[in-house]
Amino acid sequence: MVSDSALEHTIDKILGQTESNILSSLDSALTESKQKLEDSNVILGQEYDQIISNGKKEADKIEKQIIGSADLEARNKQLMTVEESIHKVFAKAVAEIANKDRSGDYSNLIKSLLDESTKNLGTSEIIIFTNSKDKETVQSILSQYPGAELSSETIDCLGGVKVKSKHGAMTFDNTLDAKIERLKPLIRKDIATQFGVGI
Image (cartoon, helix red, strand yellow):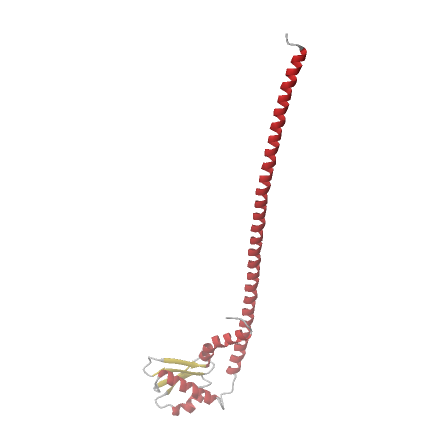
């Protein structure tokens, strides 16, 4: 039979080896866990940086959209204000023209409109149309245009003339209404430029 002392020694030896193995395993597991934790911290740090970077990019994008939208809204309001002002100016001008006295310089205006019309059509063989207010003025200068005749029909316009070649192939609208419409885009652009707004 093995003595108690030898048995104790064997048990102590086995326990010592077991303890040493357990401590070595724990130490190895601890080192491995620390390494995994450090690796995870690096990955988490990179992911955190990426999230922050993406967040900043998104914030910049949203800021640009907001600023762009505000700029566009401000520009649209400017354009609307300019358009309203232009409309009021044209409405006032049209009202003044409609109520303008047809004497004096007005016959010179009608003559220049007729000169321009015959030049554009390339003939003085024309029929002249005008409104009831300008009929008398046109009649008074008609003798200066041989081959021209005044239509008995009147047209609805502020003033001026609409001229048609006698063979009917060509027409030139030189009424004040048509002249205003032709000038509107240029006047609108000029006014918008004065206010620093592009149309």
